Image (cartoon, rainbow, N blue to C red; front, side, top):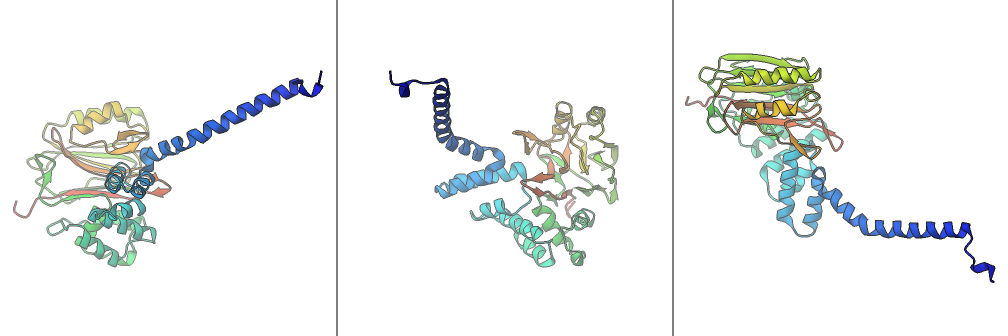
Length: 331
């Protein structure tokens, strides 16, 4: 018998390993394109997937994908907005300009003037926006020499940074404020209500409840949602006590997400017409770790005003945000 044809134990092991290797290579050759497609379809990779669709001639679908992704993640860098701007979206052009200038070392007055041309002005009868704008300057996002920029330029920057400024007093579908409210979030919370700041730099979520008819403050609270779950319970009880029709004002200072009890707090915040907009681990949330978050809503209403920016997305840090509403000049 020819010994060369006998499969020794060593040869059997070698053949087995060769079969396994062949199966592994064949599987990966077939699965890799599928895995790559699945990875691109992950929500956080919306820009890459939109680029693939655009290259395939599906420009309308690519624009929808970009708009959805920007809405979910608010990326603080220019590329996704530039992609959307190529489809002719003016707000996207404004945000692409904003983030491109930030990446280049901060906004200067010419950049603010360009933003003012792209962003509809609401600053004609606005309160002083400096308390909110100062957060941008302190973060190095605005060049100090342009500290004296006018209210119109400040309004353009704050809006282009995913802010929400409303000049006719309306809050959502039915609410209306009798006083000016300016809310900003970042390294500290700004909560200017009729010219008085009720915010602060202590870590947590600042909340004020106002009487709708007069703007009188009914409740004030500050909740350190880094500290314990008890703070979530305390905040839920606080919001539950707010009367129907009252105005709720919210601003994060530094951080307020670690012990944010979604089961308890989400319904209470949604009662003020606020919405979960940020995509985190494939779920919609109000905000996440080190997010800036500011909001104004009416209890029992819909369409509350809110703004947020991520702590970090794709290696880029977020920025302060602002929400403001004030009575129209005719009121």
